Length: 215
Image (cartoon, rainbow, N blue to C red; front, side):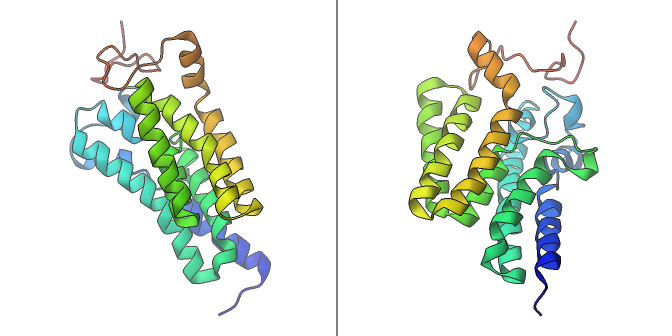
């Protein structure tokens, strides 16, 4: 059944947002007895903070869930509304993760969902993102810096592979992703950002990794 453009746009946004707003980190940590993720470590709902619970399996599951919900949102909209609505659904899924209605619009930083959306829209660029992240992480041992570098290159890869419109869509997501990482950027510039595997990483928000306030 065909829809008028306004209805199709609203439908694409709703499907994307609702898929993206599913807080896998919060759901999984609660379901498996790891506590309220928002009271642990940095308070972020993403896989990096789930890792601070010491549950590597839950962190991996969160990463996969946060990524694939972006992919699913785009593919659902493609099936229901056609390929023209896919970028809009991806953008809505990304913002759904950042500002989920279920958590009073306090979500994650969007890296995994950014990757999942890219995977559905232009999969070679998603592979490029992963390759750049791995190389940067190996060289610098900074997860946040690796994500920033990889996300910055993704719109350029999309521009080469697919064209201007999709590159603009991913560029907007990249700008927002960098904004969500502004505290990480400040710590990187100050030399206080925690490295991958570091034992002395200082979570933001004054909360210890066991969920208790710092003295």
